[in-house]
Amino acid sequence: VFTIDLKRKRADDSSFYTVVAYYEDNKRNATYYSDGSDLVGRTVLTNPTSANRRATLQFSYIQCADEADYRCELWYASQENGLINNDTKIMVTG
Image (cartoon, rainbow, N blue to C red):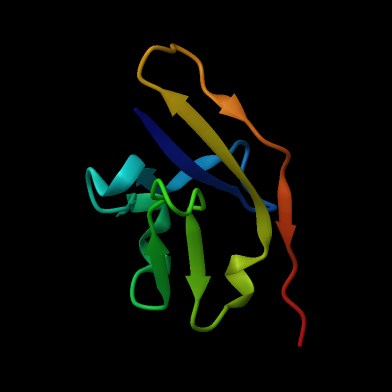
């Protein structure tokens, strides 16, 4: 059993903040955290399943405030510390 936390760090942030949590095999619906409340209504969250092991955050439109570093942390039920992937930068241009 695991949870995937999607974290975001904007240019003015001192650290990464959890914006979304995903859960294995739809045990719970993916959840927006308060730091991700700006994503509600313009993104779609998809939990990973046994058939498709991807957690997705799909934007219907982006805003300048979306420009940030993003990272995922994978948490297994038996672990105290999460496994962190490489950061991904989303750059907003236009």
